[in-house]
Image (cartoon, rainbow, N blue to C red):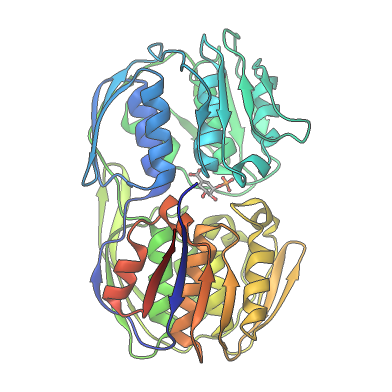
Length: 439
Ligand code: S3P
């Protein structure tokens, strides 16, 4: 267990300057996983050196993959080919990382060896049947607890066959798990998504020379191919940039430039939602980097107004709602979110965690089964809980920019799962954040 850390953030201020936030978490995971089973050495730059992505990296080292780094975002993965992974010498501990667990579950379902996946308290509560059930339909054998949670025991030596799967929830993790298992399956694996979700797995597979077919909402591949190593450049994570997009929007007098941000259209819901609320965000210098679109973002403060968030944007902004609720608390009028029940099964129940904290701060936030109604108002002062959830901790830090008194956030060590250096960077850009460590 890491040391307990709290944040104390003084009220007011504005954000100014220029920054590059750390690398994209989703892409960093995939770069390790696909690099590991490719032929040749994959050189990655911009890798996210945070606990979640490092958990994936450590897991592949335990399966015999030689990995150099990370050193200032540079990692070289010496791929072992599709059939080169070795049995780990014990359970693979994946910390807080749902992406590691769900994607690995798919990748390991087709290996000749058994493996066991474990995680921290939060990860051990999260639903895993959404991946184990379709994988079992492909011929895998995976034991969960009676509640369908980790530890997961994945039996090796199973012959997998491709399936056509209609995903009941719009989940990139489920889609990716099935596609990774599909690499090892006989015949074609097709996943149909009810709404577009992040497509980094598909893009990276194609970048490493694997054919992936997309027809409408179906994504298909045939098993038995191979991957060829390539250089990968991980853009800055739009999910981390989101804290500053909201911060600079709500704090009068702010102006920020965020560099080299991934703007894959399956991830830019936060920009669309903020613009609907009246934010001024410019996207410029668009370019393609390693198969992913990247740009610089310039954001200037603007008064925001409440909106009914279009449901089609929900999967495209799924990780950004904690901080979008803060934007809603600073907006004039009511913001209504529906169709977002998935938020209840993230690192914490993000609907409840945010509603509880916002109410402590004096905001009228009414949770609903699949979303929240937030009435913009005056943010007071108080002590809120992160519920061990990185994005809740960062969201409430940003809320202080418009608070009337200090906001104390308890239990913020988990910020290191996705955004190491958040407090330092936020302080450099103008947030009055202090980190308190308890031994
Ligand atoms: C992720 C997909 C999303 C997201 C998570 C990362 C990924 O989860 O919330 O932070 O890298 O595939 P779901 O696919 O379960 O929505």
